[in-house]
Each structure stands twice: as structure tokens, then as C-alpha cells.
Image 1 (cartoon, protein in one colour):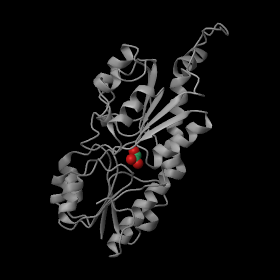
Image 2 (cartoon, protein in one colour):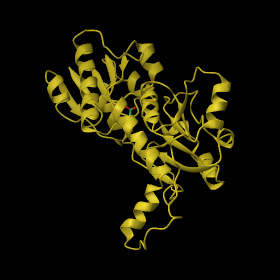
Image 3 (cartoon, protein in one colour):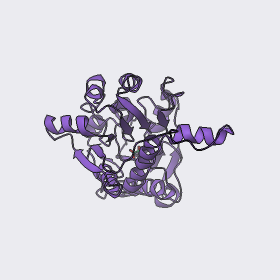
Image 4 (cartoon, protein in one colour):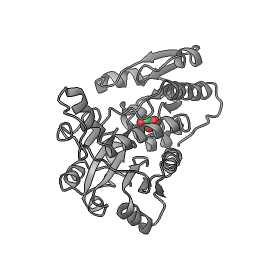
Length: 304
Ligand code: GLV
């Protein structure tokens, strides 16, 4: 059967688990018509975050039996269109939790300790020596870490926070308005770990930033669409936020050019799950789901 893999995967994954099938591999940024041709006669799609699996693609793929996302967030896939056709969509929970929590902490530490600005000076050859007043960051011990989205990744970030001596406030989208208000007003570092849905799109905008603690830090390793970038920039300009660490953006790979020169923002190119171990496990999890579905067996990590 034909499997369309949207982007080349770390191996051994596809080449091993799907060796009995015809595998066609694409790449991000293909023109829609080309993508549509590749998907039209596919029995399975191994999807990835940058390639949108739209209703139009799904409706024009009559043989499609599964969309296995090689990621945990499934906002790149039209879930409703799949559900209507009874096509299972799977994701890769669990295998990228620790890698993403580590990366989140890399951002927290970089922003809290002004690593971007300090590293630039060290590297420039213009460092003129230790000063009591240089690059003063935020001590994390005793501060409050807010977690918006207390699922697997959010909980793993919280556990690390405890090791740093932080007080934790966590919430899920089901929690009350009161918990959300506490999260905004008490967090020194607020880290986002919710999926991108119609409910969470632009969840953090002007009104939310205005209720955050002065000098607090925002970290986003979830999805760019959860944060209103313009409002974030205003919050940084006004001093409401002292810094931000971003791994994700609303229209990747575009990064709002206003963010690029800022020293108070650390920008990464969506590498939350980017370890050898996690990315291989993601590729193998998605390949295994396709292998099962094409053999007529039940899938394991079904989203719809
Ligand atoms: C990566 O961004 C993922 O959702 O797994």
C-alpha cells in the first residue's frame, strides 16, 4: 500500500517498520497541487507539523485509512474532516515529554539569566571585566512557576521547577477563571503547554498580559497561535514582561521581524522535541500506527 510521508524521518523508522509498503517522501513547502497529487492515492499519511493536512486533501484521498502525526500536537490536521470519514488520526504522546520539558527549561534559564545578551558580550571580544551590576537576571528559587496546560509536558516542566525550588501553580483549560487569574497575577515565569485549539488561539493577548506580574517571563514551547505576538511585543515594551522565550510561532517558519533584534527575547526554531532519542521514537511511533492500521489492527494513540 502507499504511504505518503510528509518529511524525511530519522531512521530506522519508516524504512524498517513500513518496508512492506510503497513509501513516498515529500518535504515542507510543496505547492498545494503537488501535495494533493501525492496524497490522492495514498493509503496512509505520516504527517508532520509544518505540512497542513487540510479537509481538501483528505476529501480527495479516497483510499486514505489513517493519518499518523509524527508529533503530539495535531493542529496541523483537520480532525473533523478525518472524523467525518472515519479515518483515525494518531499522535505521539509520551515519547517527547522529557525532551520538550528540558528545552522549556533551557529557555527559562536563558531568559531568566539574560544568557542571550551576556553570551553576545563574551563572544564579542569587548567584555571589560566583572561588574557587580552587569546582566542581573531573576533568581528562580522561591519564585512562582505557572504552567498553563498541566498535561504530560506541563507536569514534567513543573517537576523540574520543584527541583529549582520554585512554587508551582498549574492549570488545565477545564480549571476555573479564578485559577487562571491566579496563574496570571502570581506567576514569575509562565510557561505554556496547552494544545492549539479554537479555544486556546490567542489565549494570551493584551488583557491577559496586563494582568501578569510586572517583570515576569513568558515561555512558549506549545504552539505559536496560543500567543498574540503583537500583544506580547507591547507587554515587553511596557516592561510588564521582562523577557520571553519562544520555540513556536503562529505562521512558521516566519518569525515576526520585530522579535528578531530584541535582546529580551530568546528565539528557537521549534526544537522542543529535537533530541535524537525523541525524534526517532516519534518517527517509530507514527510508523507503527500506520503499520497497524494498514494491517487492519487497532491503532494505539488515537486522537479521533
Ligand atoms: C511538536 O511540536 C509536537 O507537537 O510534537
